[in-house]
Image (cartoon, rainbow, N blue to C red):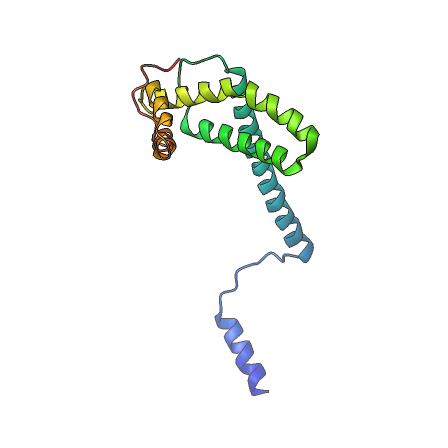
Length: 156
């Protein structure tokens, strides 16, 4: 009896804010909406990556202008995934597709590297550093990873 009186006394003194009862279904719907929103953002991210990849192929013969750092890495990432897929699948069919892909892909890769070097305010002569065995590739990768310069006098 004493416990009930104490409970009622404490209850009267407390300020009770109205609370909306949330059912389990509402919580599941909320979680589902969060998951779907995350999936939408992920799909948008993938679309951006592949759009960048396709745009780079469209600009295969464009050695002028610039390429932002993020676009450069998106292109290289997708290119690496495609090449890895061919190597992983293996066999004659993959080999017959891989060779033309590598030969045809030389021009877009060269164009994007030159545009990226220009964006980092470097000369395309930095490609000659590849002639230095070992460290030449590392030095070029470092130059390609440099941030974009704010002066956009060369941008289209």
